[in-house]
Amino acid sequence: MNSIKNVLRITLFLIAGYFLVSGLVSAQNFFAPLLTGLILALVVLPLVQLLERNKWPKTLAALTGTFVVLLASVAILFLFSLQVKKFVEDWPSIQEEMKPKLEQVKAYATANTPLTEEDLSFSDKSAAFMPGTERASSMLGNFTDFIGNYLLCFIYIYFLLLYRSKFRQFLLRVFSEEKQDQVQDILEESSLVAPQYLIGKLMLMGILAVLYSIGLGISGVDNYILVSLLAATFTLIPYIGNLMGICLAVALGYLTSGDIMTLVGILITFSVSQFIESYVLEPFIVGDRVDLHPFVVILVVVMGNMIWGVIGMVLAIPVTAILAVVLLNIPKLKPYGVLISKQEYESVKD
Image 1 (cartoon, helix red, strand yellow):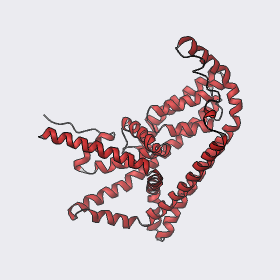
Image 2 (spheres, helix red, strand yellow):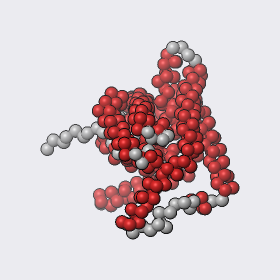
Image 3 (tube, one colour):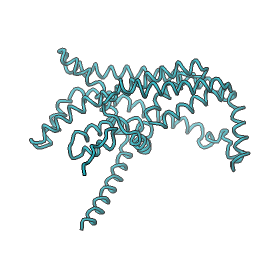
């Protein structure tokens, strides 16, 4: 009888999971901006609370918090756009510089693997799949969607900050009186730990971007600022992210110049930066705040990409971090919180 119940429970869980994922995919245009707004509202919540304690009106405090996020996002987008523009302008010369090395790689691959020259010929294949007018129309549609969702995020941030007390009271009244204290503790801890965790990670990425820029600039890597920004962002994904950053730096550094010292400089830069991150920055910036298990991070990033694409990858980590905070504060669900975090289970006595 118990085995039948377990089978039914697992079956219902799988069916519910399937419909949940399908629903998230279908409702991306609604949930993605809302979830992004919620995460960013949590990041600036300490600033808004500080302003309110200093007798600022709630409306003005919420507007200030929203404006801070707007300025930060515009600055980041502007920096990225400058680097991408420079990269696009340099791309023809980069292609010419990379040709000799790529030809060597192609010759080695055709001589030592079953691959043929036709398999390794990538020239203009992708461009043939879509006419120019369709590509332009698709790009315009994507840009319009991005601007709409981008502006919608700030509307959500403002209202989430302004009416957060009302939302809190609603959540408290959903549960019975004996559970309200527990819910209150969970809400308070989530509102404290989540922004600390997110801000810590952002600070870590910023410092790594500076370290990468210094090392890659000295090493002679082309477009080293763009490479450093992307490599620092990739570090959100354990192990794989560092490898992606190194591969990107090698592609734009060693393959364009062919200088072995550039390759040595890239390897030294990433090795020293990772050492500093693991033994200096991580303990002092992130510290003992909730951190996710590396295997869980990889899983949720892959799942986020499958559900919502790039924005899903970005949101997967902070959402899972908040989920870990909630699970760790509910006694019955704490084992699941320990499972997805870096905390260890208490040893069970025989």
